[in-house]
Image (cartoon, rainbow over the protein chains, first blue to last red):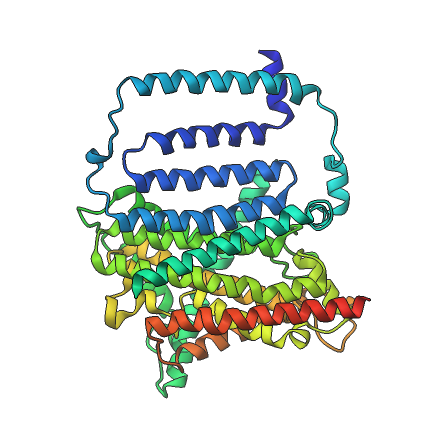
Length: 178
Length: 326
């Protein structure tokens, strides 16, 4: 119990918002109305961006909100609202025994992740970018420096993939309208 | 202790913004009257100064009506988010050299991130009202806000390229030694002004609430205090957009051709406010001069005019910056 408290006191904001993110994510899964699910997912994203801020990664926090909530979730909401999914009751899934098996599997994975985290995270070495260094050079500069030097090729490949996806989407929508 | 200080900041900021909005609504009425050769409000108080206050009292005392088939929670959340998102943007805006709540390392991106979550309030308002006009208005508005956000962000990237920083205070400080960025980035400034007007849902881009077609768009079902929040949100957004323009392009609190370190801080505040209000006046001028765009023209203008120009501006700025460096 004491160790739990000492962990909490180390960074209370992280534990509060991490817990909140988990609770909101559970709400998101259990909501019968998909629009509510989308709202809870948006709130979860906000909590995650607060966690980034506690890690001094302000740039990633802002980009998280800009991209995930501002762009992706808006499209999700559009799709949900345009699909006209019908009454909430029709959407409840009755999957029988699979439901219980999946719960057991999910818990097994959770325990595995917890054990792995206990082994690696606590006694892990400090990386190349500890918080002191990020504070010194600024978190935006740190990301930009890495992205355009060591990770240039993955970055370019990802941009080409996204561009291809965009062109593909335009072609598909053009074909339907003709 | 930090929490109490933070709450204090919120209260001070809220009262400041509320007063600004009162002034802005009055200013909009007088400006529109002046442009249309009318007198404008002149009965309540001297020169009609208390007209807005009277309107607010009317709004607060109005009955709070909610459509029985509307979605209670979403209907309630939408106006709150509409106000909170632009309001929180003020946190990072520097008014004078050492006056501003928090200078973030990525200040400008933070404001854009908040602006992008504004779309939700509109969609929620439309969906929660359970009203066709409201939903159509919300859909139009969401499409418009997503489309104009891209040129909005792309048009300021040139400024960030020249400045080499995202921090608002540093951007203003850099304009002290050199010139204002509006000189280097005239195209970027015009694009930003147009896109910001559209983001704030102001005429000639006020399709989401086009009174003559949609009965008022996404806030058709709102009344009383909740409507007041949408009203407040629109003007707050305008304030944030104009403050951003002042900081990024017009040199923030700086006075040109003068040694700014000799000037007391309270004059800097007045300079900043003067610049912001000049931009707001420009936006009001737009509203009462240009007719409303049609919805397909609006989307075409955003994607086929603003975005290509913003991209060209970015590429040219990048090339010149690279050339000057080498």
